[in-house]
Length: 243
Length: 354
Image (tube, rainbow over all chains, first blue to last red; front, side):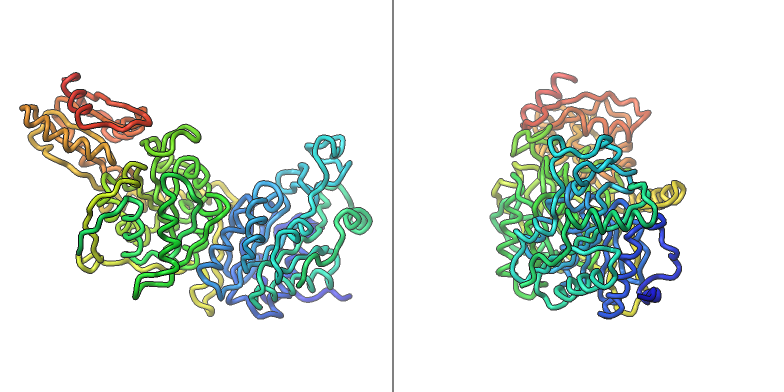
């Protein structure tokens, strides 16, 4: 397909984006921008990003934004939504924030069925800190802190976030996994998640597989292959719950 | 104005309601938990004519702190209440509030430490509340000495927070939180207290240009400027905010320095000592941060001695010393970490060190 134009909701002053070349998050956020444009929610939305690579988006959008750390972006957004139920409140964070250091926030926001949207990037490592093992690191994947590869005996097996959240979430919640290198699928799922919140149906959560060429030490084709031939086998795309 | 028989925790909730507090996010912890109970009840049966009340019992104190920040960003008078290990966890959120100068309000009823400690009483959270977190301690901390002050300072804390835009705390303890006593309750109008309204940081107006708030900076110089600007603003408001109780200090030869409930004992000790012919006075810092530096120096100059009494191992003593540097007045201490201090103990200690 042709490369769609810059989203209207992107802030021109803060372009180009601050991600490493080839990072999947830039694609993801371009897609998010298109969804914000289509739903026409830029003026009633709060976009909240977390620590790590996600904080590079603190001034990315022409949307009111806040930035926190360690997964606390989820309770921050829950607080905003509690205070202002008509706002569209969205948290954007990484797999460390959502599945490790702030996992309790994801679990409990899902359990309470907070009417917020959480978008989580799964790039199978801690990227901003230089490529350490994450809960999402795959078996035998080499990272700075698993130089011989992740071994299940020592580090367990990769966490499956949407599947976990699906076990907790209430009817009405929307939970999905998609990938940043599939524009149509990614856009459809981000849009459904935000629409779920607009429709007041409850918690929405999308995990997005995302290329990390710098820490994976892969070139462009290898990065795409890493997702298409490797990650999707461990982290299947789909919608886990959509009552 | 009326008299009511209330516990400290009830008084706090009544004070919050009186000044238009809207939203509590919290996690149960002794000796603060009843604040959450009373708020949950008030949310279901709100006082007539008041705002719609919001409540969230979160998964932990980090979540409670950050959800409070979310409420403040959306323009609510949001607050939390915690103690001990909960205060430790909530420092994460307080640091962020400090960076963005967000008017969060938190009630800290101290319990024993370190770690889980005991669940009822101590004065060991002075350092943590005033200076906790990875920042510079640009926070406003009131220390309440009675159930009455828990009510009074609840109203004051919201006003100070929203007027000056710094995280604000009311420090108390489990004894006061769980003691029932008759206090005077009132509406702010009855005492001509102007209520400072809340204001949204985000989504102020749908037509406004976007507001992008953050805690991350690209350059050290950028962050340095933010901190220096905040410190300058904090120092500028110190004369308006800092306060103390100075009881019979003018002709006193010996000053008892104590805060919170120990300060209340100190006041009674002054009367007892004076009845025995000993010229004692009380200097009770009401704001531990910003500290009433000027008054401390005025009160303590040319005195024979100051006795610093506290239920901790020198947290108040160190604070006082740092603000009276250079003063020649002799300093003595009465330190009982994790234990209460009676009037008689203060009286006896004064006689011992005289």
